[in-house]
Length: 364
Ligand code: WQD
Image (tube, rainbow, N blue to C red; front, side, top):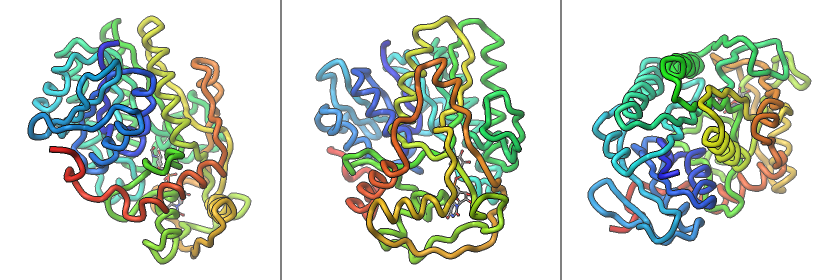
């Protein structure tokens, strides 16, 4: 394996996966526009991986240098820009993990064209660049949201794709694009990983989710309420057809998710060209109130909340059938809801303001 490119690698899932790949001894390049990720996250990833400092080599380019088998290069850039992509591929990329994208259901309802541009145009430009540079191994950050409001619980990969919000439609569109590319020529090795609800943080407290602006997703919002950054959690709907009336989701620890990416890459590299589609989830469901109570009990604190109206684009229940991921790559979640709550709070309490601003934290 020459070098792996992570688009959006400065973001929540990308940064945790970057660390897992570096710890595996891989050489990693990251392309990120820092719109929802932080260069400070990658400075810390380099530190946690024992690579030393990320030093600026030129405007918009930082590197740990080739001090050993694993090294990290960071490029500031946009996946929708062919020139930025060509710069990222110039280092000789053997495989791509495509994290760059927007991922909030509510926000996608309000800003559909932005979601179609970033998620779909960005993926199209990336695939064109991969073609130009002879790279045909791709792990795609897909999502359970493309199943929509399904009655089948737990949800297998064979369930119909019936998105109910623009975010889900963009993920379904990119999955279709990847299937067409895989069918167009025999050499493509593609994994479409359908995340359920990634949450938690690295146990060191040095990495975690730091969404720009007000968090759209439950867990980071809950953590910010616990840290006193927000007065109260709004629970979107108390009248869903669930045991306690609040939405049920399949929450998985981001460290388990990072491991899932490492294994998917290894499977693609070891096996003949294929289009692999896998759910990544725990197979267990927890309600909003279950998560609030687990967070309070695990961390010995109170999280003020009020139950309000439902959020447009939401569904009642989303739980993975994760059997295929275990069968195809020996992967399943290993961390509990308590681990998620403990590690998420370790991050939030140690970093009440998140990573801080901009590129100032990087040398040079
Ligand atoms: C979870 C539950 C809300 C916020 C989306 C994507 C999914 C993944 C994660 C990619 C729901 C409720 C939320 C709040 C609340 N993205 N909620 N108050 O919408 O299930 O999944 O994000 O990795 O693919 O679809 O996640 O965290 O927004 O919502 O009550 O302030 O929490 O109604 O029941 P969602 P979420």
